[in-house]
Amino acid sequence: MIPSLILDPQADDSVLDIAAAPGSKTTQIATLMKNKGEIIANDISRTRLFKLKANLKQQHITNTKITNIPGERIWKKYPEYFDKVLVDAPCSMEGRFTTLDPDSYEDWTTKKVKELSRRQKFLLRSALTATRVGGIVVYSTCTLSPEENEEVIDWILEKEGDAIKVEEMKIPELKLCEGITGWGDKKYNPEVKKTSRIWPNNQMEGFFIAKIKKMRSTLTPELLRQLS
Picture 1 (cartoon, rainbow, N blue to C red):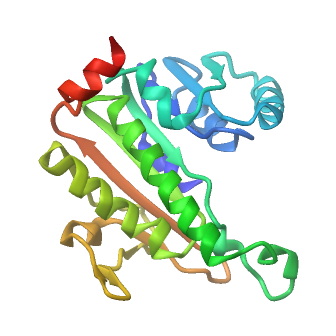
Picture 2 (picture 1 turned 45 degrees about the vertical axis):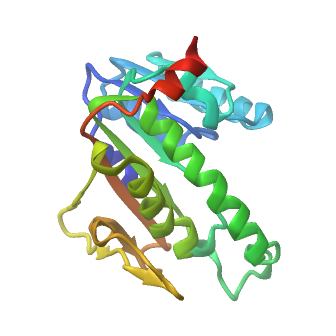
Picture 3 (picture 1 turned 180 degrees about the vertical axis):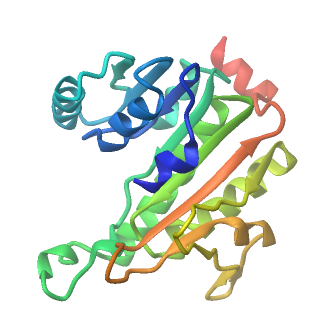
């Protein structure tokens, strides 16, 4: 539940949860907003959207609209619109692996990690394009692989340059380890150190979080042509 706390949504904010189903973080965000403001809860899976809708109803959430748009393209409908965006990205879930449950890692492959990394990069870029200047994007996964974590942030920093800024995070009484600056033969942008890792322990599953502030518009002439 940490990403929603880092996002810190306010009652008058417009918020996008780009991969929302089944909705635990959406309902947490709505609670932090006192069920005010505006939330767009999006997911590509129609089946998972039924669970999202049920959770919103159970929690009496009324400030949320559900959409079923590929996250990579949602910026086209909402260009530079949101105050805050959560990208709790689909991932390989390595932070939840346990030797006591072989099913938890049965489907893991290096190929899957690479495929997810590519998707995560485009989800994050879409999220940033849908965020207004001065807005905040929180990127998170429940996995440990650098390809899905620091590499994704390194990639977006290379693509967007000084249009974005990685911000440091603190949560009282919770130890956050800084992001790693390289993996294998790859070296990452030093700003990646401002991201945070939670290593699996007796209290927490493994997790990764990054907080990004949008400093200037990322709507390039090429992107604007796609909107016309």
